[in-house]
Amino acid sequence: QVQLHQSGPRLVKPSQTLSLACAVSGDDISNDVVAWNWIRQSPSRGLEWLGRTYYRSRWDSDYLPSVKGRITISPDTSKNQFSLQLNSVTPEDTAVYYCARAMNKKVQGQFYYYIDVWGNGTTVTVSS
Amino acid sequence: EIVLTQSPGTLSLSPGERATLSCRASQSVTSQFFAWHQQKPGQAPRLLIYGASKRATGVPDRFSGSGSGTDFTLTISRLEPEDYAVYYCQQYGHSLWTFGQGTRVEIK
Image (cartoon, rainbow over all chains, first blue to last red; front, top):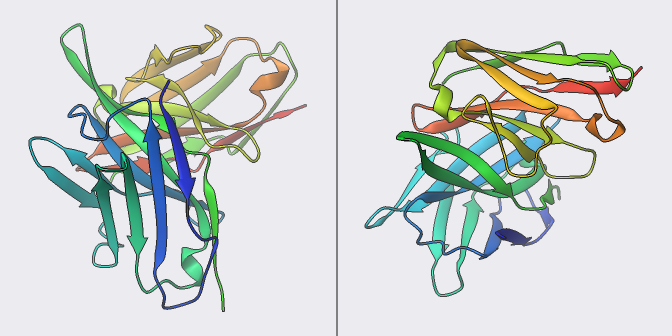
């Protein structure tokens, strides 16, 4: 059974960097049929996908355009975990942050892509 | 970016009744990349349906998904007490995921 365990500070000051880690058990983050995602949820924005990292013969990442330039999602294969760094945060970055696994699965000749496992969530507040 | 619009915002129904939730996309979505998630208060979302119509492991068969193109539906055939929650549709397209704003199913 795949589980995702999140860790990181819950209070970040404006203009500083938000850093969270997601430790994976039950799967290998270098698995080439999955991607590892960060998603946040707030009353104003709802559920918002931030980005992902994945291994397909090499590591790569994709990001939501509106946060690109401020965000880095990176793997740590030695710890079987991946992390989120969001720079220059403002109060608008206050949210519950989730890590999640997306699975690329072939069923009867068709490829399916879906988010199937979520971390428990970390409430991060940006405030001085 | 594909925008997903869910309706209604809130559905008030009694246990045993049928729930029909709608999700409309701003442009055509690949069905194999469309899913529904359930979220209860204080919990992370949970995958219910993937590929528009396939139930995830352990999901009761009272949950069913249908649709294609821009219109998708989640149906709960007979509401059980544990089904009262918020439901989100989700899609992957143009290298990013987007979510609907959610439909709350509440006890009438």
